[in-house]
Image (cartoon, rainbow, N blue to C red; front, side, top):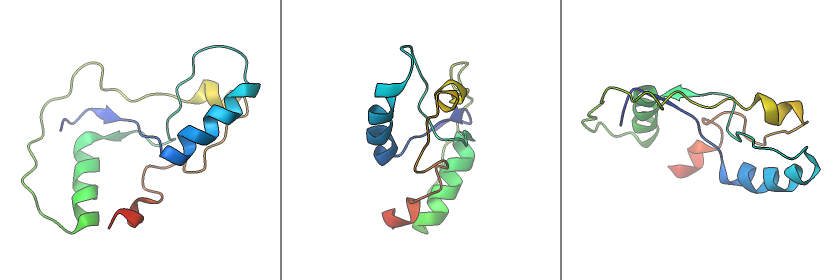
Length: 93
């Protein structure tokens, strides 16, 4: 795990967006949630969700770990079911 910025997408959103994309202008889109998060923040939050206290070895981020921007997707009218990586995570417990 690194301290780099991570972007997530819920599997339900991946399926839904594939259908929505049929009506988008052709092009390349980032399909991610609205809340990029630092990897170390996510790891600590996830450990708390699972009620575990692992030793997490956080590495320095790489230049490509900067999250993704979904503005182009939203400008096409794209909508997410889960706009935050925190949504629906409680079902993992």
